[in-house]
Image 1: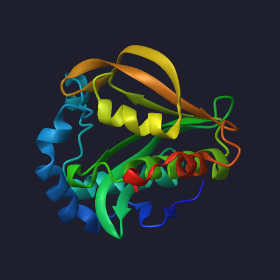
Image 2: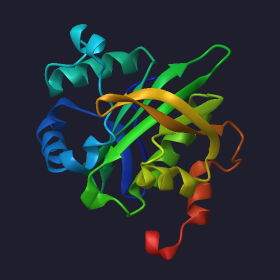
Image 3: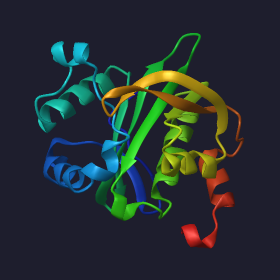
Image 4: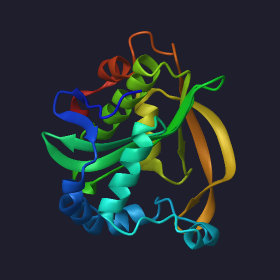
Length: 203
């Protein structure tokens, strides 16, 4: 795997998160804190004590860049017409007999509902299965997060079932529903499937 990598479809792009994104990123997070808080990954007390929280945005980006160059993650900024609107991270990249990864994402509420997030997720799925040659991509979503579940349902991802107490979210261990894409599920790719399924109101 090489890094940095940028993938695009029309006005939607996934490009590396950069240190100079700090001001815009912080403004988006502040503006959306009430909307995102319920779905935010958090660290249990033992993680906080171990110093796993980056001290600032620059430290976070440097850490993500190191992990990306080591082939373990893809820390992408989600942009629309060149403007930062969210973040999508491919994590847990594993080769060997598993050849899998997971995807997490968030978007500025003012840009939700425009088809940006499904397009970005489709781009990421296709990159992982085609360019990286991964066998499996999964997305884990809280059952209550209907907006995020609509994203993967629009793309036609496979619903696999419930994982009890799977991730630490908003201060507690929470159940998640697992969705997945297996290499070869969509011969033309997830993005092509999304294009075929889109309706005019989502454009």
